[in-house]
Image (tube, rainbow, N blue to C red):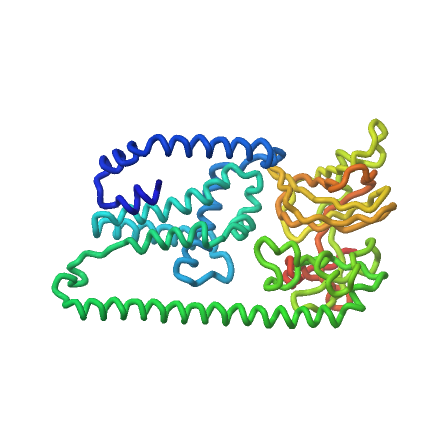
Length: 425
């Protein structure tokens, strides 16, 4: 319908467009009823109602981030290396509005293609308002995983090629036919040259990232005897960013990736000798710093005698901000179990964290958390009846040990060192 109204009929008066739509009212009504039925079925049988939907403000922030960081760079074939930030996103949006208004006023009919391009963004990302996956702390992750060109970039490009400039600018009425053909050919060649140059620049950048990722992987493989030592506790961070991106990023977490290097590897119980793999693939001595100690286990504690063990553990952490973080959990389990962590902030649960394996017995393990903003954590077994319960819990963050253990440095998700501080005693 948008194609008809905003592209094919862009030169018709709005009254004529409405009249054309009215003539198609029966098939449009049938399609609307079918769409409503499909939406109701999806809502009833597919959508998870466990979490709250995002606010309009969070949805608008996600749309702004998607537009400035992914949609606009994709239209000019120059993906960004990292998110631009709110200020530059707002500047980009303002520039688009100014340029769009100017183009719409140049030639009658230009408003339609511009509105169509805007509608593709509004409809695609606007539906996040009804998703329980979007929250304030997961905006970046959601817009990253949704950057599929076929849904926004391709329709927007089809719309934008319908734009026209005034004939007096091109002298179309005075230029001979052969000259006009030559101009069009030159324009196509210039566009092709730009695409080749921009693709080459992008591929060079990706090649550099891939080369660094290969060096990282070689270093990790060479150091396998160190991080796979049963007497060592590996703090699982994320591998080099080029190895797993967007939706696949959780697959690059060390507790999931290193099994490909040492089959059957899994981080063991927490012990006195801790290491981490830094951003270069080097195994470095590490420790953990307590962010919140002695966290209350509000559900799933081992001392609960009023009901059988449900397996679900809920921790009331209080407000926490930061990343990366781990749950340091002492637990008892009757059998091996995969648990999926979830985090809550301002009443909204985020339950899209990758699972962690807990071995049977009474053990102490580190469970990674992807979210950096929370006031509660839940651990939900993916298989019921495992007899899982928690004894003690704390929230900790990894530190890189330097200077013979006298000083430590904060690290990010990939093991890049940051601020220096005293090591915990």
